[in-house]
Image 1: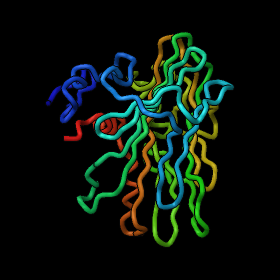
Image 2: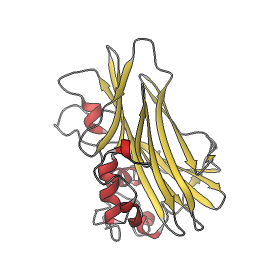
Image 3: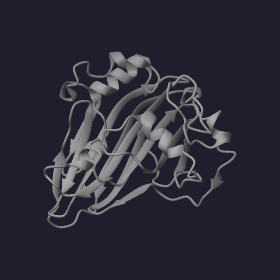
Length: 261
């Protein structure tokens, strides 16, 4: 089945027929759930060769519990987690995706996690974080950002693991576009990408934690954030994991909902 997702300008190739006509980030839903199988609730964790990636979300002063209120499994193995908290709906679409490496070389494992927060009555502020925990002895890392990419990387003598998402400059551009982030965030996010001088932006904690501090949402506003994780054999000449986490949200979304056949 080939179709076009409304207003996104991207082709939904390989998306199941029942979903191709209805998967639409612009209508405020991550995706419809009536055709999905419910699964046992569990925290979203990505196991890597150098530890486990764990996520956290704060809505104003309140931290979401690790396990969602509901969880569905897509046919391709992706999962949709959903939390309901004080009128806010928080969705996490997460799974392993198959993306051709930038240099045509050997593929690397990539996981994409797309967060969506919607609150009809608004929320005072958002913090979404990802952290590589349970690091083995001898592993080291820290901030590893690039142009429009906020990232941390950890490595030892055998492996490299990277976690990445949009930096403040890209967040501002997404807000200006108004589809993934509320347009009024343009005046709140650091205009020059300098997080140190703003209440909002990206924060890092050694050795491997990255957090996106975002403004509040007004009624009916929606915020969406893609965080990717990848790993590869350590190779200073080809840091494939780092390149792999620099992936657009739309690309990750289509891979996460694609038909497995």
